[in-house]
Image 1 (tube, rainbow, N blue to C red):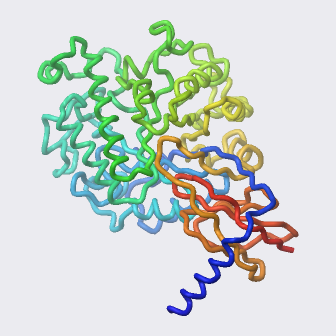
Image 2: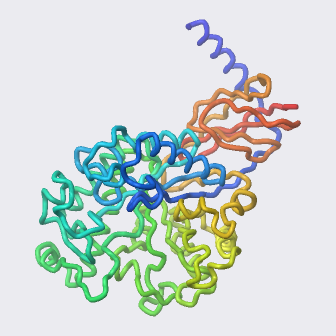
Image 3: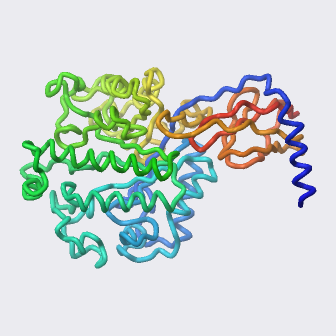
Amino acid sequence: MRRLAIALAALLTVVVTLPAAAATTTAARELRGMWIASVANIDWPTKPGLPVAQQKADYLSLLDRAKATGVNAVFVQIRPTADSFYPSALEPWSQYLTGTQGRDPGYDPLRFLVSEAHKRDLEFHAWFNPYRISLQGDATLLAPNHPARLHPDWVVGYGGQLYYNPGIPAVRQFVEKVILDTTRRYDIDGVHFDDYFYPYPVAGQQFPDRQTFARYGGGFPDIGDWRRSNVDKLISELSSRIHAMKPWIAFGVSPFGIWRDARTDPTGSDTQGGVHDYDDLYADTRTWIRNHWVDYIAPQLYWPVGYTIADYAKLLPWWAHEVAGTGVSLYIGQAVYKIGTASPAAWLDPAEMPRHIALDRATPGANGDILYNTTTLLADPLGFTDRLRTDLYARPAIVPVRPTVAGHTPPAPILLPLTGNTLHWIGFATSYAVYQDGNLLTTLRGTGLTLPTGRHSYAVTALDRTHHESRPSTTEEYR
């Protein structure tokens, strides 16, 4: 064993002095994400109570089809309704796994989900819903050990659903504890929230937190400012604590696509939205961006180009302007589930969604897209998925470096002599990018790749887990 180590050290001593590849290596830098929703079994698992083998096989199929489409990141909902897709001492097992909240599925889904995504070199973002408890309004239907039943004073009913009250400090501390516990125990790449903070307004109903405001809202003459402060604290505290624990993890939010209208605030967007992040969901995304509390923002721009109320072509540059100079990455949430629907009619045009991606790529500061939802995407609505595979995502892409996340450039890998048609290398990195004739062929976690037939030159670069890329290795010719 010692003799092998000495030989390897000698090989490294010789080879590292070789020059880098003469051929230029080029790769697109673009996040290509896919949301996998578990709430109400939208995407995965397809229904509650499936055998474990079926759950696993279905997930692997999702990943393989995503990878074949060109996706490089998955955003998987692992805490849909204050329950979990992993063993937790804080919350019960999710009903969407077994059909009964609190019932053990017999394995650790999250460990499996993360591991299989990484095997395919897909980023794994753990998607949490911070405040939603249940899609129905009866707390007695929750698992007996559910925190909402143990702390009924934390719970409010609104719109026929149950929520944790964001204005109670103990609620915020509990939500943070849950997320940080998961972050500590699992090898995730990101912590992700969608657009649900204070719930979307329900006509004729008032969110029942007046007594909470009276108790905790001292110093806030306006209840709206107090509500925004409650969410701000959650975001800012999680940001600092996540990065202190694991500096490489990306913390990001995908808010509703309209912060405020220009008719309400002259710095808002040229839109006529019926709902706004700032005024209705109490999510002040502008403050989060400017204070670097998020590493990325992924507004859900779920409207077509030219739509009068909310024009995609106007909202995209507005959000790009919001992140300009901050270092916060911008991804765009895309409504794949609307493709082929008739309201508005623009979604019947097969060119509409490709038009969005083209606009993103032409907009400085836009770093990619996240597609919702997986079930619709893989059904190939109006040929969109096939268009991704054969055109828009035909060449693979590396996730862009996020300036606000810690990372470093790894050393270049060392190519070994070809063994038949297999390329091998030595490296000390999370993943590797293999270039064929200077163009990115694939990325993978591993140190070997079976090459396609044909005469080509190959080089390899190393990537750390935050996608900083090394200089290229030497090149090898394969014929």
